[in-house]
Image (tube, rainbow, N blue to C red; front, side, top):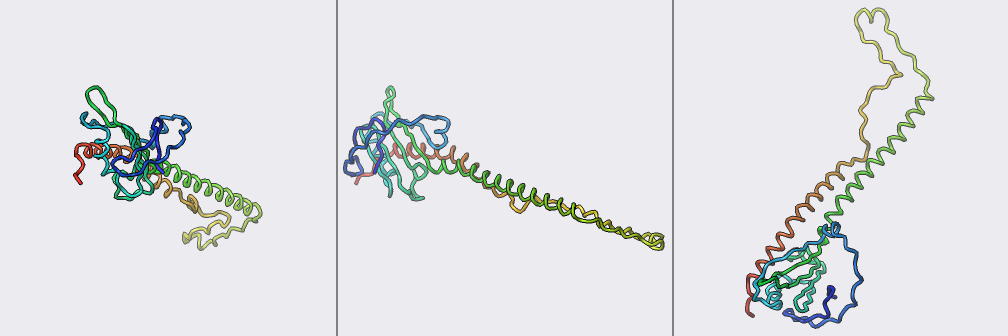
Amino acid sequence: MSETSGGIAGETAGPWGAAPLPERPAALPMMRLPLIDHIWRVRGDVPIDPALSPEEAFARLDPLLRSPGTTVSAAGDTLTYSKDNPAAQDKLATFTRGRLRIERVGAGAVLRFDLFSHALLLCFLAPLLFLGFAQMAVAINAWEGAGADASEKAEKKDEKPKPVKVLNPVDQFLGAPAPEDPNKKKDEKKDEGRHSPDEGYFMAGVFALIYLVGRWLEPWLVRRRFRAALANPPAAV
């Protein structure tokens, strides 16, 4: 079932041949958090030929939207779409929901878009998840280390001191090394624990990089695709 945005009274069949869908109740007003909202939403505009009507502009965008699992709804100068499990070949697969609107600006016109991306949201949340795994590994290592230290101290407390062997005078004269004190343990390098947090830190860095690249690249790509589609008239059937 397609979505309608605020201010749209109904839906039209448009160039996609879909039958009119029943109206949905008006959505409750949502709290606006611009800084957080910026994480997964992309907004912008593309200049278009002012001679184009909204129907003609949307018809030129039709090839971008004509893909399996995409539901399109057009009403006047506004078009909304939603995608259900888009294929990798879909040029708008990154943005699973969107609202496009044709606006007149002076003597010209622009296509304003407001797109939502589940992929960007997941890439933003993934580093937090892996950082949580890394910190969990650090906490488990600290807990296990504390238990091992307590056990070692208890063993030392109950253990009786062992006698130290003494070299005979001949061996001392020949320079033989003195026997080791059995009460002193060899210095051993303590490891960080059985659970390494390095993998968690690495994956968090990878997904953070993917998000930063995608947050810049995907809006640039979608503008270029809208611009190219609006510049070319639809092919005659």
